[in-house]
Amino acid sequence: MALTAEGKQLTEAHRLAQIAIAAQGEAVARSLWSTLDVSDLDRSTPMWLGANVQAARRFHGQSEELAASYVSEYRGAELGSAAGSVVRPGFDAALQAQTLLLAGPVRVKLLVGKGQSASGAKSGALSKYSGIMRRQVMSGGRMLVDATTKADKTAVGWRRVTDGDPCTFCAMLATRGPVYGWLC
Image (cartoon, rainbow, N blue to C red; front, side, top):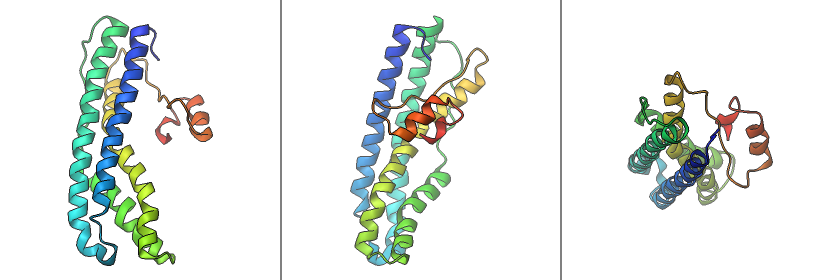
């Protein structure tokens, strides 16, 4: 938690910028959703998945870059020195592909298997998929902050901050500290 006014301002600006990057990633994912052909998922999935992994990589990288700047600026505001290493966990394309595949085409197939129409299943899966893409994009910054904090012997820790209007569940988790922060 920031102790200085400058640290608080940096943290809020960082939070808002991360949300904006995630929204851009989601917008691209939503536009790519139309390239997934529910009448032939097996044929359309490879091209769809490749484009989505590429988008996730781009926005994940932006999230990571933003977090790297934030960590240095935050150290400067709170400690008077931006010195210290920044740990960049990087982008795991195979894990991202698996996550996006499960949230997209596999979910559509599961919904069809449960009796939904193909178009209904595709439409129903989009909302969940959009949220997954946002989470995957923001993981770039989150993983960097987590890894950097763990590697910094002077760091006390970090905590997740919800938006200005969290759902009841996320608000409850935020009050319980970082042990549950990964769920929000």
